[in-house]
Amino acid sequence: MRLKGIRASRNIEDRRRSAGGAGGKAGIGGVGLLIVLAIGYFAGIDVTPLLDGQAGQQSSATRELSAEEQRAAEFSARVLATTETVWADIFPKQLNTEYQPPVLVLYSGLAQSPCGGASGATGPFYCPADEKAYLDTAFFATLSRQLGARGDFAAAYVIAHEVAHHVQNEMGILGQVNSARRQVSQARANALTVRLELQADCLSGVWARNVDGLLEPGDLQEALNAARMIGDDHLQKRAGRVPQPHTFTHGTSEQRARWFGIGYKRGQISACDTWSTENL
Image 1 (cartoon, rainbow, N blue to C red):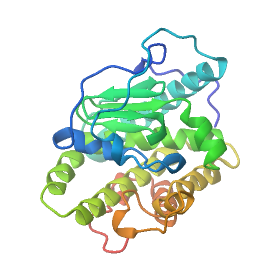
Image 2 (spheres, one colour):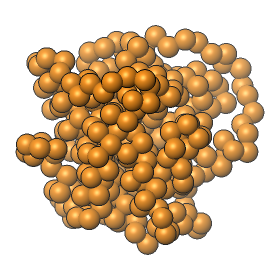
Image 3 (cartoon, rainbow, N blue to C red):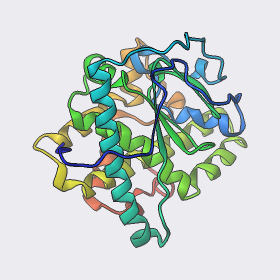
């Protein structure tokens, strides 16, 4: 991805020097429920045990950041800026409203949010309560080295996916899904979350289509490969489990890659209607 000369977003909150993060905690229920939007099962670890906001404590001592961490932060700030530019242009044209961008919180190890606590092992997540996306920059190494999703555009796709959850929040979709999840069985709640996640993948494709001038050869393949590597079926197999569709919360590898492709091909928010489609 060609990011040279791209401005760095100012909507960055860097908590990495003080490990453990900051912010309130919430239990399962209310806004805390939506921490499940994090990409789960990374490195074979299910996100569920971390959803009660009771993650362990780390020392709050100030620490020095490595050169790799600094590069990851600079990369994240520039990718975030591209999402700001794209959605600020799309919202008035396609939704007849203005876009208010999220803050990206960079943390190390553990993070606290109004939606609960999480660790870098759970992957990035979005908290609608404070309208912030959370990212442990060390996750990029996990994405590449452990999950086989290599390349800078694979990392950019992950950031774009979390911003897409903010887009859904701006559109009022997250609140509707949260309310619906409380009234149905766990299996049905999981199915609703799959549709939410696949829509975020599609919206990530819309973003990719609109930064086309910044793409380099192979970038789209990197994003599609990343989508496949974080499909529920693939991650459950990787964790030594037999895939259980009723437990899926993000969609299969095929679904995630396909919906990203739909968003990229169409470039329209309206193309990302995963709610009225019977077969995902």
